[in-house]
Length: 179
Image (cartoon, rainbow, N blue to C red; front, side, top):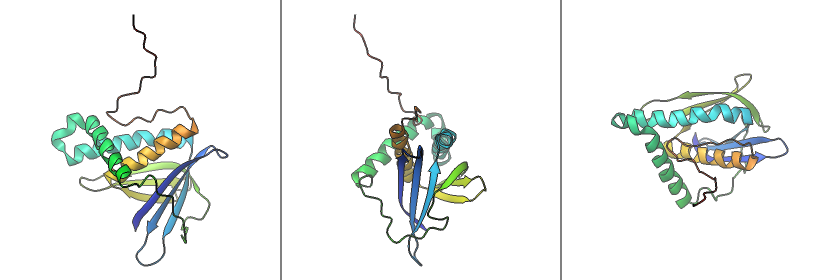
C-alpha cells in the first residue's frame, strides 16, 4: 500500500484531533484509516516522534551524531518547504470511494511503538486499548509533514502544549524593553 494523504484536524466538539490516512492499493480501491488523538496521547507521542527524528539522523549519518538536533531542524525546514512548494498542504482531503478496514468510526489511540532501521522509513505502530491499530511507514519528508500538521492541530486546539522540533529555537514572546 502506498500512502496517499494524511489529514490532521482538531474536532472541537470532541476535544480531540482526528487523523485520517488514505492509502492507494494497486489491486483494489483506496483504504482510509481514522483515529482519535487525545491531548494525553499527543503528550505521550511527541517525545517519541522527536526522538525518532534525531535517531534517524544519527543512523543515516553516524559522523553527524553530535549535531543531530540541529540537523533535524534543518531537515524539517527543507521538508516543509518542499511540501509547501508542491502545494501538498493546500490539497483538499480526498475521501472518495474508500474502504474502512478498521471501521468508519475513528479508533481511540492509547499506545504507540516505534521501529527504526538505518536507511529505512520510520515505522510507527498506532494502537488502541485492545491493541488493534495500524503501522505506518514514514519517510523523513512525510514524517516532518505529519509533525507540522500535528503542531498546527494542537495550536488550533489551544491545548497549551509546545511541540518543538529538536534544534528549533523557542519563540520568545516576552516584550523587550530598551533602557
